[in-house]
Length: 304
Length: 267
Image (cartoon, rainbow over all chains, first blue to last red; front, side):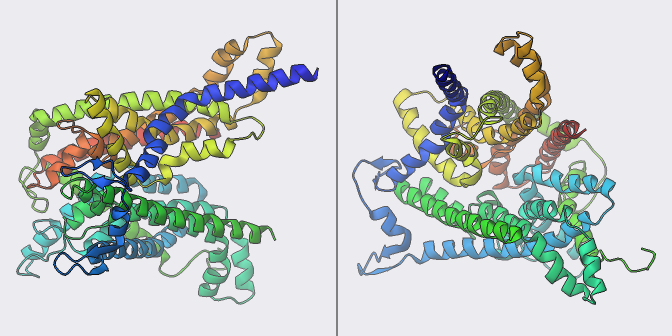
């Protein structure tokens, strides 16, 4: 009897791994495995024409943060890298904040529509979310470039005499990223708000709460998990953004993603590129771990 | 409502929301409208014309890139859906087992690692394989796309499986159906909408990918998005508007289809 059960659970286990085999094989070969190779590459020496020489070196990691002055051989911080790192982090944070300021009221707006029209509003959010990121970035570019819609219209009605340079500025990058990643904020905030019980708000008003008090003391604390999830969903892809800064930053306003690419292209320093990629991965992992911790705590406090 | 006091109202929220919708759609609508413009401008309307669609259609590079995109998306969605169905069957409707969280982490890994990091890691690995084997075909792109499509194909299939009634399968095996017959005649037909939804999602995701393709492709292997990215460096002609509009229409079609498919689940 117990023999039979043991055999059965063994077959079950074997079948399970057999079923998982194709997915695992593909993922190990083309997703997880290569990450390990990146780790190895970050400790090698760059080849003259790209690629690597198989000689161990910590140089790449050192160069992520420091640089040796070519003439005086003194050590300093790698200003170029640090300023790009700083731009990536600060732009991502600002994008997250702006996406929240716009996304929260929008999610609220959708959640307070009649039940039968909410799906339609959500579809309106989903469509940009699923349309090509490159096309949406390109649309912004068409709007703000010197020969673009805004400048042409402003010139035509005589408000300005020459085009305003909007493309290739930090502001254009920020606007583009908010535009591109906004749906990622709205989706989880809406999901949290949809379940919100508005009789709580009525109770608060009965207790003489003001509108702002209702918003900050009643609604916000309850939908906070959605806001945190949305913030992570916006912040993480912003950090690794490559297409948007390339199109709207035009090689002038680089972000981490572009700096990494540079090492594999013109820079011909694959180990440095690998080390930078892992630096990005570490920052993203920290953000995700932070999220898991905060989300876990929120979950507990909701139960308690 | 009778009190004339709407508890749901928050000052300024509706205005922001309407502005948000306008901002989300204005640039896209602009592209679509001006793809039919006779002139070069994105601001001055010179009359309706199919000119840019015709010139995109006649552009051999665009033709080749389109075919390549579709071929890659087809194989990537087929392979990833196949792998995802098997993985979903293995991971749903069972008791918790050892290694479960490892498997979930593996399947969702492409969603958590920034695309640029994956792209760089694939560039490194595939460059060595290219040197070692001499093969430079589309296979690299297909396998790379398959990997990051797996979580997208997996999600709707798993959701469908979880919502399915186990009693039908039990009834089938009570009536002496073999496990394969049960799967073929009972499980699979119920699972079909989920599989279709997963495959469509995977297809759209593959078709839209820029970053990973840009790094993995060999010379002359542009897909439609990487071709467009390359064009953006030069003088932009409204031909790109026309290509974008077609891609947009296609994505909207597939996504709406996906919505309808996942809705039937609820009913």
